[in-house]
Image 1 (cartoon, rainbow, N blue to C red):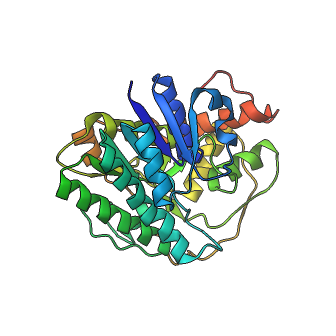
Image 2 (tube, one colour):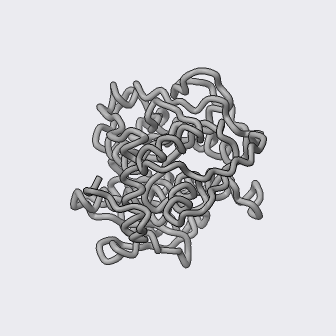
Image 3 (cartoon, rainbow, N blue to C red):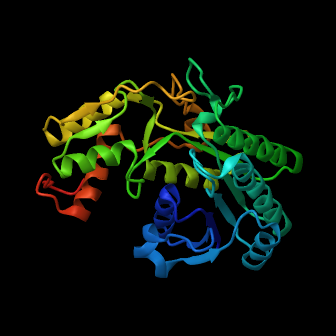
Length: 318
């Protein structure tokens, strides 16, 4: 039976990927940081293996990979967009050199597929559909660390003719999303009947339901194509924050009390976030299954199941 190793499997996207794999009766191993927060995995804890390891520890990573010999590796472990007090060295130690450590260890034992995780921010500020072949122009340290990782993985894939890929997710939302982000902020404000403070109505993203991202990872692993190594995992449609609010209002048939701060865009805020997903469609046969509306409906239902708020009682399960 194949072994599926997910680094960062206790994170937002990782925890959803774990569940999708379990639904398919796969053997799942999760590599986490030492003393991890496992709240996202509580309900499936007895169905998976948990391995604690600092990914910057090359020797420990090598020992673990040699012991478990994973067949498919989904590499999602990373420091986030705002590693406030970590500094650029730790950012690169984890995001770039952590990937090097893991991939080198996996090369030693052999594998069927290795998928690293990139970011749409690698593209920088473009005024066209974001296609995988575009030159990378990252605007912040996090995206630079991811772009460096992409180039390294591409080099390894081509030089050694190995099934190494980069999944480039766009703006994920859904179950287990951090509470401070846009869509949880909107949903929590609505369910608690409180004013909702948001930044600018004009911020724009290609929002993709997190289970569609998981299906994109699986499509890469199943297809293992020879033609390309990088795949955008988005919807091909971008929405402003205002449009997200309006779509949510249509779902709940309620006007929300939004307090717009109208803040200035951050230096790395992209003017265009629209993914070109034609390559994933043509080569992987993959496309997202959810529109913004249907994804929001499922996300809202998940929040309702946790809160049983009287503000929302769905007529049926989305």
